[in-house]
Image 1: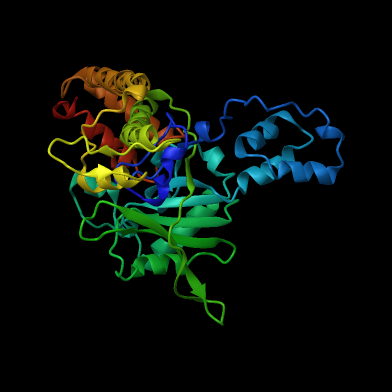
Image 2: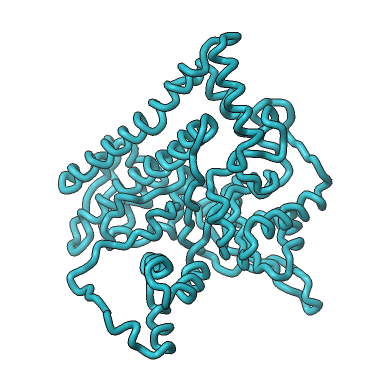
Length: 420
């Protein structure tokens, strides 16, 4: 778990829409939730005099608006649309997450779930690498087991094309963070491949690197994310690594998905829903930690013991239980306090419905349509899927349909032995 991400969580209401990554509980926020306004409080009032204010005061008021309000103003008020758009897209804590392979493979619509017309407006982007070595790998080759490393161009050319693609697909981008999810040792030298990638960034773009480091290396359960840059030299060229922020937290936003249409869209929708399901499933475990902390320490101080059988650990201060659970996994089968039982039962019900209705159900239908090898059903399913990969602009790749990642994943999932 990232310590910085969930500090003082017991002081806040539980976020039942929380999404978090499986490795270290880093939060991800789907765009639809990012722009969803919180329920209005009792002190919220209309402000009909706003348009009567001088332009300078209007701009100042807009500067205090949160992203959901700005997003609403972008659509509802012609008088403030341009300024609201400028503030919304340049929000300093908003980073839109895209997968590295989408960029590395040319930014074609078929490689990602994101809506291309949306990311074309993004100014601040976080490019996610599981490991910076993904710069040199081909995911299709890995799935098919044909190669562990695959390069269609030389290394320098591949880095150059990375930045060309990013600027072409995100023409408004001004700030880029290259994020890696592989944890590193505290004194481990930073990867040369990452340095090479940052050095080739165009001068019109500000670029940073976000790296995970083990918080306690010998226990390897807790990590911290930090932010780095290549400090400029006197000549203005990138120099040595410089730590910008030792504990970097941010709002990582998942762009809205493209339209899921046709047989490829139906399959991609199940993959997208499975991504969201995994994020919410991980978040449910984090919420149980927060619920116990909040139950014992929010507005009161009631020390408690570890619920794991045989563990005699005792927690007198907020945060101790979360840290203990992170290192020991003693929260794995722990139930939430009774005060939160109904809410967690509802969450579990929502997750089970999501799993059955959005993932398992559609996949069973696809398996039925796939048919037996050599059958007319199989031939029809293959032709429909491949035809859409070749001709639908939302699902095309740089490669022929049979050589695409979408086809490799689809045929792997259609293997009956992998069916749930």
